[in-house]
Length: 229
Length: 229
DNA sequence: CGGCTTATTGAAATGCTTCAAAACCAGTGG
DNA sequence: CCACTGGTTTTGAAGCATTTCAATAAGCCG
Image 1 (cartoon, each protein chain N blue to C red):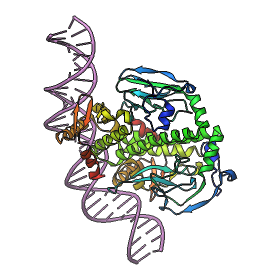
Image 2 (cartoon, helix red, strand yellow; image 1 turned 30 degrees about the vertical axis):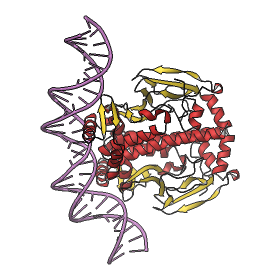
Image 3 (tube, rainbow over the protein chains, first blue to last red; image 1 turned 60 degrees about the vertical axis):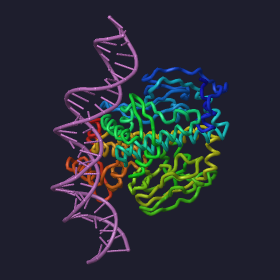
Image 4 (cartoon, rainbow over the protein chains, first blue to last red; image 1 turned 90 degrees about the vertical axis):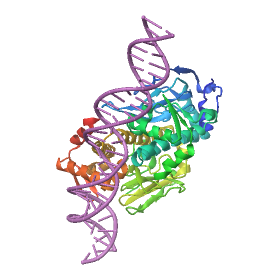
């Protein structure tokens, strides 16, 4: 597996298949991280901007009271710390969900290129805008939707994101998410998520198993969201 | 009231008092908008980047089912569309809460300056990062906190933001928010917000009246958040 | 004043959580 | 290869936080 080139990722909307690294960005050989390990811890200093080449990860906020809120799910092609070409500290930890391979590019070189190349700067801006939009959609979900609608919308959004990555198209409808992760993302209890997934399974909308979930009837899933949305 | 200069806003962390416009940014005389009017509608094209000079506003998502989710509160010095120096369409409407004065700067000239001046680009990046952080904090609130904790944390965060603006310091503890707005921000019903505000008032933590709320005991408010956070 | 938006309060309904217990599955070491 | 272990999923029942419904009161604007 070759690394994602961050410039291509930026310019081609985050897919760009697997291209050779561009020497000027001072590419760093990809690192491998085992499932459940922490990729970036809170407060860590970053001199590199990482892109996920393979595997899934998630961004997590640990609250003092022990609760955990998942802030976003990261899939191959995603930039691990998108707001960080200039800023160099991590606010929320990023953890591997499955085994993950990612590679890093020099922050300072990337900065320089962003200023040289307007197209690149625009692309990077769009990357951030997209992330922001995801966050806002999530906010709307948590603020205005019922538990079932949240689960449905979450899956619909996730599938939409994956569909934008041609290289992931084949497996796009199987997501490697355990239910506790979905619960922590949507602000629900794992038990309730289990109940919701059960009913969806009975209606043949999804299949599920230990640690994964397969979308069978995307149209119906959209309909669940649309029902009250 | 003189307009906020967007460069100063960026470089000086969003305050910078009221400075004369910088001709190179093609400053536009500030516009006045009455309370409750829409400043920017969804889908509108923007050739200018706006900064609020006076008054409060909010960013709103209108759901098909009629529910409304407030995405952020905007105070004087805030950039109305922070991700839009490059992108030119509006995803969520922005409405005036009180009477608002704002002024616009040419998007294209700002773009050019961002590329010329590294300090400015960094400052702009930080602006976006701050916005993003606000969104994520909100996500954590909605996902993990009880209703009372949400209200308390919301106020604490808001006061913290205002405190960073020296020019607003005097009035920093009176926020012109009707309860329905707080409810729509935190994903609660207005009735429940009313109940929560009532108990806070009985405990002498806040005072409240039609359309405003005064923070009396910030320390206690923080304690409410800290209790379970 | 009259009308409209905002705030308050109560009682009933509900959606979700919590607690508890069991089944299940994947990996580990004997 | 099997039994053990730890994490995940499932299911049930009770409890609670928040919503909904309904009705009233209270400021504010023309």
